[in-house]
Length: 235
Image (cartoon, rainbow, N blue to C red; front, side, top):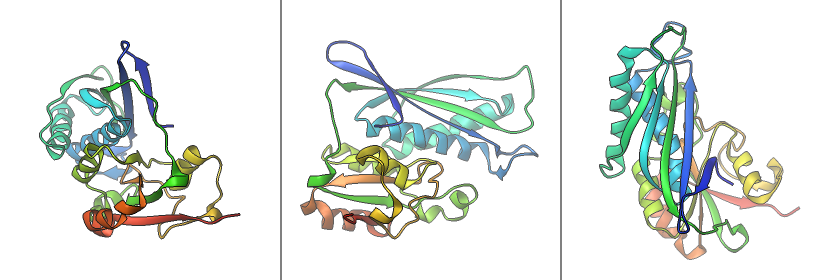
C-alpha cells in the first residue's frame, strides 16, 4: 500500500526502507528548478522520512546519493539536518556517496531512510472513518513560491506520534492515485475535494489522513487552513 519496502528483521521487528530522488533541481546551469542544495536535500529527506514514519516505523539511518558534485555534499547534509530538527531534533546516522569521477550537466540526488517497526498488519478502513488531505499538492517552483500551503513536517510528525491516525504522503501521481491504491480503482467523479486530485504533490507537500468522525473538529483546529475534506460520491 505504501511506497516502502518492508523486510522481516527478526520475529518481532521489520526494517522499513523508503526512498526519494530528484533530478534537474539545484544550482547547475541546466537545472529546471533553481534552488539551493540545502532545500533540495530537505525536501528529499522530507519525502523519504514521511513514507517511513507513515508505515509506523522509527527511522534510524539516512543514506545520501549525491550527483551534484563534491562541493554540494556539506550543503545537502545541512538540508537533511534541518529536517531532523523539525521532527524534534531527531539524530539519525547519515552516510552516502558522491559521484566525483564525472560531472553531470544537471543536479541529481537520491536519498534513502531506514527505519524499524513492530511486526503487525495494518490497513486503512475508509468505510468506518473519514478522510482528508492536509496541505496542498505543489510541484516545481510552486514548492518555493507557495510554501505557506505545504503541510509542515512537524505537523505530520505530531499526528504520526498520536498513533491513532493512518497517514499516507501524496506523491507525484496525485491524491486520486493514492486513494485508488487504498480503495481500488476510482474515478475523479467519485471524489469531492476542493483540491486538484490529479495534480502532482511533488515532495509530498500534502498527505492523506484517515480519522474517526469524532476527531474531525480537533483536527480542523490543529491543521487550520491545511485541512481539506474528502467525500465519496456513491455510484
